Length: 451
Ligand code: HEC
Ligand code: HEC
Image (tube, rainbow, N blue to C red; front, side):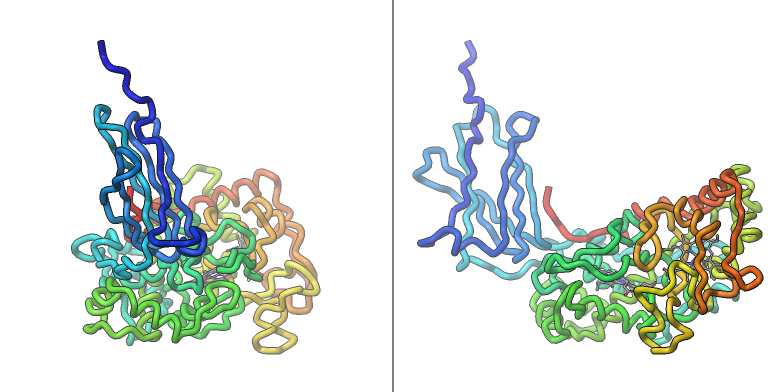
């Protein structure tokens, strides 16, 4: 007869603190350990949340008296989890995670911390479809001559983009508010910063930021260049809350950055300027060229449904959308007041230039991947594209600065679209989604979280 096996031979996981008088006082700040049996027999999952990125020792015991070192686990970017497999006929085992503040190596090598490909991904020379190689599109490229996208530079930028060390308490990265699956935007109306406070505007999608000839960034275009913009969120007191000196100190302390800076810039010296260059390179590398719209460009949209083609004609015709969301990237050569409200709570460009005639003017955002980046407008007031279309159809408000393109006989435009035409316009906007963008590993989180 088979001997009955103890049903839970993995009964216990303790968090142990070496040499501590008070347990709480010794635990790394805000850390949290969790263990859960998995449905597969003999498996247990250990998850550590630890914004301080410490090294923990997993130890095993069969009698709760003698403990043996089982494995060292280092947290790389706030969390780490692993599955533990113990054989059925093994003796009853107890596990504990031991945290010893003396035994901190404080360093992770590149290969431990990151899951990067052995040769860097191709960021510098993406293969572009013909309609991206026209003189018009090339002229819109805002890449400065001193900061071309390189494979190593964009790789470094990718790591920085996902690294929570870029916030004061290691809880927020750029990607917290610019999420790949949401077209590098945030599904929240207002994003949450490092201390739980909300931003005062809706996060912006980052697709094809490179193809914006004006080269200004933010809803109010207050940053003159992308290189200037990328250091702003790091220093913003709601978003990430670091000074540039603190930033340089934190980034310099990580061994893997020494390697990444060396491949990008020739030596390991960390400066805020180099951080800005690398982040800008990564953002300019986020290019979307394989939406249904792109695939239809060469065949006069024979891949579109009749409804999508109807929507396309409305976009370029009766709807006058292309007057502002023009070009291959659906951007504009100007900022506009599109008549959302009067007066404007947020004066947009007007607050920067302090001119009456700029009140309520905002950057005309690209509509690429727009179906992924809701909610919409600078204040995220519209949840859906249906609401946006409804707004342009019948709700544009009178304002002294209202764009001429949105006026008819000097009154706010009324498109008078039928319900079917509105649906068609939304169907067209949906063709601007590029499914590869949300899944392309070269834009994804490169950190090693175990499992
Ligand atoms: C807490 C949320 C949050 C974090 C963190 C954050 N952003 Fe943003 N981002 C926003 C918001 C909100 C806006 C729009 C702000 C505005 O216009 O005033 C924005 C705008 C931008 C833009 C302008 C896009 C355009 O088309 O003009 C870029 C580029 C950008 N962020 C990059 C970054 C980078 C790089 C980081 C990390 C260093 C980062 N963001 C961190 C929320 C965030
Ligand atoms: C006069 C220029 C202009 C015209 C015409 C125009 N837009 Fe816009 N659009 C803008 C501006 C400017 C914004 C940002 C306004 C803000 O946030 O305050 C915007 C925002 C949007 C957004 C939200 C983008 C985001 O990332 O949140 C969508 C979607 C949109 N427009 C679609 C359309 C469609 C569809 C049409 C045609 C029916 C159209 N637009 C016509 C200038 C224009």
